[in-house]
Image (cartoon, rainbow, N blue to C red; front, top):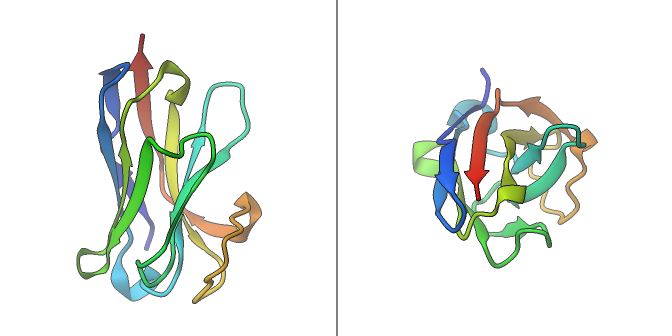
Amino acid sequence: VQLQASGGGLVQAGDSLRLSCLAPGRTFSNYAIAWFRQAPGKEREFVAAVDWRGTSSYIADSVKGRFTASRNKGQSLVYLQMNSLRPEDTAVYYCAAHSRRYYSGSNFNRSDFNSWGQGTLVTVSS
């Protein structure tokens, strides 16, 4: 069972977009889910995360105030709401599950995530 990210597309600067990550409950219900992104020629970077309960979210400083993350456990979905998009937000966005069940910390290193979705491309034109 894998994570499935969707919702990417081509938008203009200032637009909004919501990404969805299907995280099947039987497999991922007890794991924190995070969003990472990778722009061409750059390292994959943390964007946002939601804890396994779905009650706490964490947002990277680079997108704080514009992006929010949420989780609907009943539907096994994790969302990344992106507002006021900028050309520098252009990247492939990935959702990933933390390797530790019931992890409730606030540090989200790429190496701590061992289940990745296929990624969805977001392109923001100026």
